[in-house]
Image 1: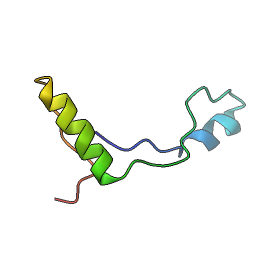
Image 2: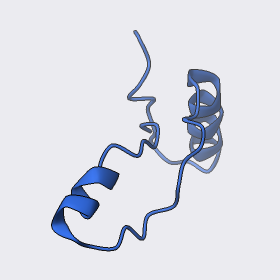
Image 3: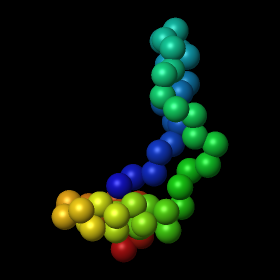
Length: 54
């Protein structure tokens, strides 16, 4: 899991393309990512927190 970020939004604008990605007012913190990873693992999926500091 990696947190969503709006870094590419300016690329769409520069290319004159419509940005159809959802807007992100808040980037999820490490705890939210860990909860998402735990949920996916609970379904038997392999998941890691790519934003973790370890």
